[in-house]
Image 1 (cartoon, rainbow over the protein chains, first blue to last red):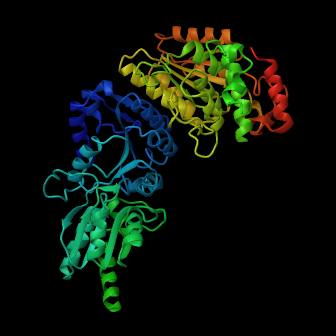
Image 2 (image 1 turned 60 degrees about the vertical axis):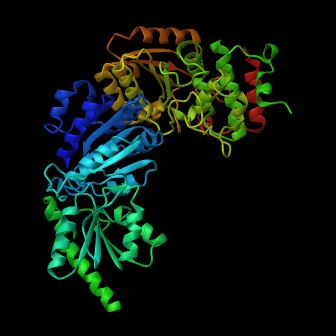
Image 3 (image 1 turned 180 degrees about the horizontal axis):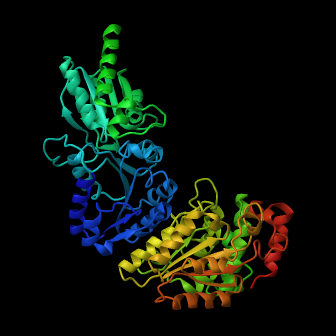
Length: 312
Length: 291
């Protein structure tokens, strides 16, 4: 996703000389092509995220689109008040980009587990939040994000995720959800890089004769309400999947719609269950340990369907 | 009933103050600030009284701004980072024609755009909303950087509180401004030596303050923040620093509560609202100082 983002950003910076990138002293190697190509539009803010985000708001006030690039929680939780007051309240054209959402930096420990950012960023008014699920979605989302004014949050995974979409996502518009797999027994709704696990779960369910639909939500806020309502009307059980705490994140957003507008369809949220990951390991290990890998999602879906069948 | 504007302006010849004179504007900032704080039962009169000359000199003698065209592209940018002294900026803007003086009486009121901490929404002439301390200098760094990228002639001014300099983010931004050599960025600290609970000295010591800024890579000087001529000269020198490759800071030594004897250097008046006899006494003292 990171590489797809940098590729699209390079193209867009080529085309639009009002795009500036500020990095919080991160992105060695990844950003090097940009430094070489646009030395006058690259700023290193140092390890000073609060100053970095205020600066981004000030730069945006001079008629620029400002990309703020950092990893994990550093561009969100640390300068949160600067995002709220200086960027969002002023509708500053600042795009906060996080590389390493979820357990990407799993082995580095709690400080580097970005597992509340979706919930926190979603709560701030006038911030559009993007959670692409694979490189193809990242390309589409990055292009769309750079064409809208105002403050946005882009949560990326790592540099080498597998492609889930077989082809580029063409003509995507905010906030459209994307169906990856049709199914009729249960729907798996995914936001972010955990999409690979939702797809894996659907495959596992298919082997047991259960038909699971998989829908990716590259835009967390605004959420594609129309698609959520359609799913609520068509299924008795929805499962949401996110590499983020279940408190206030994607699953919560779906539940808000289900509670206010749904027809009694149950929603089960898979994600970090309002806790910290206290062991370390690679991304897949932590997904497995905290019950959000393909096997865990499939097991949960099956259990829910069994429960529904017994309910009659 | 007499209008708010008439009440404040009535003592001037033909009811019209000469707001191009920084001493007149500073007096109006104090007079308006006192009445606005009284009407709203609001706080922070001590800060408004200390920052009065700084804001007055900026609007009369330093800033290139136009009340008829508040968004003109080459205007200078002013950020009041100590947003709690917002009524000083609102007064200066109203008195110099950005919006009606009469509107000042809505400060803090239900449905008003004149929030206690300075806000840009619906208020012509305000660039940035502040209130959470430690944000303004960073925004100023971004603006100054943008101006330099555009090779634009305008300058950026940020007014900070001394207590505000407890915030780590101020020093992040100070490092960044120096690193990028933003020599058209000017910070002014309203150095009234008091903060919310007690003195700066007893809270988090800032001295040697001037040296700190120099060590962070800034041009720094100290002036009497109530002497309008001294302030003007300091702003002139800061202008002359464009080309030095360093941002400039003016440490304006002020007195919290300046102009009202019983408020001066009295920590009570950071939060206390002037009412009853105290309000009348403060008003009488200011009336006696009308320029």
